[in-house]
Image 1 (spheres, rainbow, N blue to C red):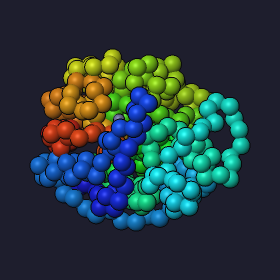
Image 2 (image 1 turned 45 degrees about the vertical axis):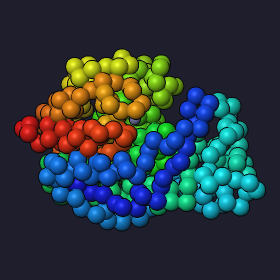
Image 3 (image 1 turned 90 degrees about the vertical axis):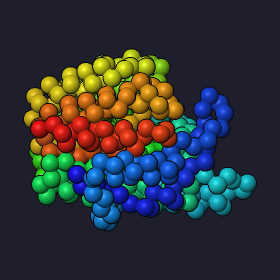
Image 4 (image 1 turned 180 degrees about the horizontal axis):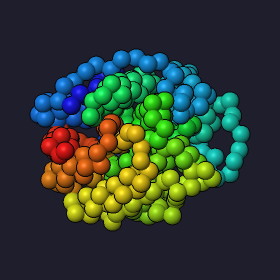
Length: 341
Ligand SMILES: [Zn+2]
């Protein structure tokens, strides 16, 4: 299938995030994209450079002030006395309301919900390019391709309308889903990253025109902890249009694929014009985050289950971290999809 990419991701190379109270080396590294590209080549998919679509698609789901913060924060951060090379918030208005301050340290806390989303000098260009990658691939589907793949880096599904988190800055999946709404009355999002797609859920939570479904490890013991529970069903006009299917920590192929197959009934009843897959590969047994134990065979079966939904499909890359099987697992998902009518 056609796959879109951009080399601008390389400028985003976060050096650290906070894990159990310690600085840990960044896991969301440029090498991820090289391994994913190798997985595309192994599957004989064609790679196409992203076109630029400007700020418009991003503004479809993000606030102007948040996008401005992402664009300007790294330059402004350098002016602070004794600052590090990455913007990281360390004071947050947790569940207390509050007012957006003028201080950059204050704004960083306001717009960054955890300490796994450091902003460096190349972060804005990379994150903006990732949305262009997603829209370029969405255009392939609009033009009539059965499916297309977007090699997005950094990922996006933990990003809210106005907040970064969990290695995510701009929600590529949500931007693409909103863009596809200009063509289809109803768009379904199925997130199969092992972490709940909390940002995507929140962006569409009160809307009946975008169905959000997420298969992920039980958040009681796994990031993003506070969201992704089965009782979260949407609100207002969107009530009933959000479905969470948490699976046990350490789930195997059978549990993972069964949850994806279960989601097919809800998606079919919604009758969308197009399906957006938030394609995380971190359910892998080899992933450093250790949320599940899915093998290449499980990923191939997941791709086949998605194909049986019978919808035009846009795959948007989310998580999935460095291991020897990162590329092969991408080959497996897309191969399973293409081999299934
Ligand atoms: Zn993930």
